[in-house]
Amino acid sequence: MKKAYVVFKGRKPGIYMTWAECKAQVDGFSGPVFRGYGSMEEAKEAFEKQDSGYASRYKSSSEVYDAKTSVAAAAAKKAASVVHKDFKPEYDGEYYEVHSDGGARGNQNKKGKTSGYGYVVVNKDHKIVAEGYGSAIGATNNQMELQGAIEGLKKVPDGAKVYFMTDSVYVYSGFAHNFPDEPRYQKWEARGWKNSTGKTPENIEQVKEIYELGKSHALECIPRDYEMHANGRGKYVSIAHGDVPDEQGKWKNPYNKICDALANFGEDDAERGKEGKVSLIENGEQVHEAALFVKDLDGSGHGYVVDQDGNNVEVN
Image (cartoon, rainbow, N blue to C red; front, side, top):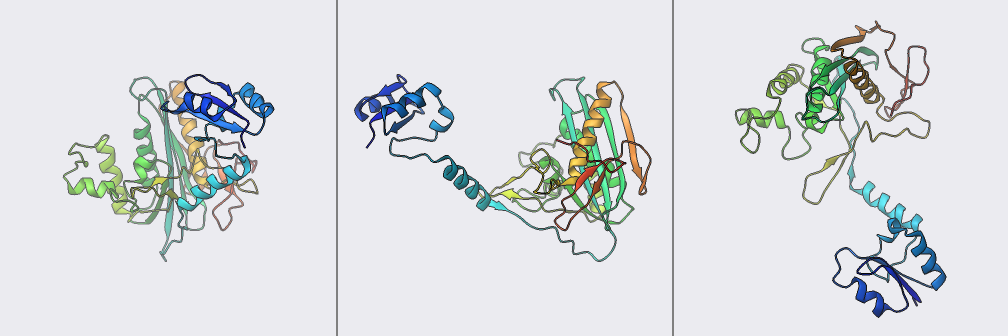
């Protein structure tokens, strides 16, 4: 039996001795937050802390809060909704993986912001054969996402098979086949390069360029995890900023962690007023001291990101 009630958010926040008093403060109130306690001491402590973070879980005084159980249940529910597909190339010939990223610091609608992109090209034997980045002033995030992928695809030999990965949903959805509106580039081309609203897509020249590069290499997307929603449309799980090391401290998507770092290199150059392209690895050979590598890649595709001396590199 509850002996006290705390209204954290209601007509008049406070501690109430009866359910009737509490109900008067929350009934009909938009988004009330309240909870019943077994003793006045617990109620006072909770109200003093004003811990609305956990209190917001309660929509009625009958609910019981157990942090460990609650967090575990939420995690289990999310995990159950995630669709995962392993990357198992079904191509017998030589193939390449192209990973890319792009970024823009500052407001995308204002000129003068600093922007950058990065790419990594890996061969069938998991050796990095090309790596580089670029910088620009006044480009948007999406333009850099596209350019990073374009520059990476250009490093693949003509006609060679490509498996593609990027954290950018904007670019990835252009080639993916997971949802009804994909692959977007193919659908846009079929409509005369119009999107679903009948408008010409933004960055259309870059879009057409990457689409042609993709077709020339019979590009396929490396599978990405996504959360499936009730409306039939999923949401891709982030592979760069949302990536966390595994139990051994290895990154789950190490090549894209490199691309993320390279995009930052580009943004740093742009902040110094420098625009252009920088090659770090060409034809499998290091040509710049800032080159980054993946060490101890395992069967799950996890690995450490290291510098030219084999030292682990901090990437966020």
